[in-house]
Image (tube, rainbow, N blue to C red; front, side, top):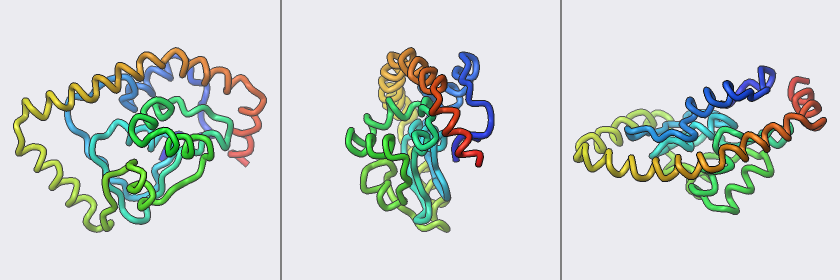
Length: 184
């Protein structure tokens, strides 16, 4: 799941930096990351998942970016990374509707690689990790570095606009209404 909307949503520069580091928004991570989703994956949960390399989910998993429902700007990387990973129309539908999709739909649009029965999810993740680990470490690391560095470089060029847009949304009356509605 994502952030606690009833908590601090100010996104001061220091908060934004910590969040960006935690979500690997602008920083490439040198090792492959496998996601095994076994439940709700929304908001910041999706944004964290966007920094993973290979993903599977249990059939009951749900995915979404509900921020717009509460007048919150999704500044954890989804506005930059999602379109690169699943394409324009699918990204815009998730970002603009705030709706949730099931695991089958997430697989269909390429948000995850596959749907795996819940009791087989962790064994699948471990087998996948073992398969990667059996390959040439230098080749795996080179592929990972090139792909994630390119993504991080692009995200970094959008950082100032992300902050500006998030600040604009947080300064609006809609933001106060949205957060109050969520809390109620």
